[in-house]
Length: 315
Image: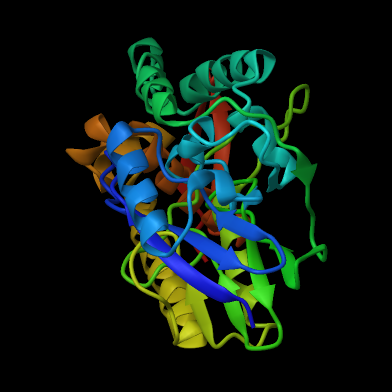
């Protein structure tokens, strides 16, 4: 059985340190690539040397998803090293200009529909600033559900990111889980635009719930995670996360039972101070809960002067 080494590097984000993994298999494989800072690179090189390797020894990199704290150090690694991931990671890690133009255009319109107003659209700048910690690399190989890399089965787990995958080793039930299920904190299902030219946006919280339930189909002994400690109590933790989400949705329903509200109204009620600092994060959480309530028939929405108003459906 190949040996797995965890390397922990710092990030400038609120989530704190991020975990990277080295697999000593037929090819020396790096799972996830940290964040693009000098500090993260120096820590990575030092920890890699402690297990007997140099960055040039790495033969391939697999990314669990495209977020900056998981791909940034790709820019520091030799450009000849293959980068493997889900096809939806490609425009993000390549910083594809057409894709980011579409991202901006889509969210400008979408945020107005959420009741944010013109001044709120400027908050998209915070999102762009975080991309300086990302990379500019091409995806060398795309993987999808059911593909096998060096004995690891690829499982698509969209929700936290549209590009999210996990890797599962059937022989011993080990899973490399990225940010899909974390021990200490809930993963945020983050808003992303639809593919260029499409109008139907992904609904990340609904996807995330489905992706969590999907794990119950596998005999998992341990999940090594993107942040924090391993997860060994997989099924109870999934139940806990799903139950907590239902409780949050119930609270949102109670807000809407008092009066109809826009997405932004709900967001400010849920996160009265945090929304200023973590705009896209809190809006993602809010829209996720509204998508969930709409899917179960507990709320309905109506467009009034280009803005969606949500109201509770009383049973």
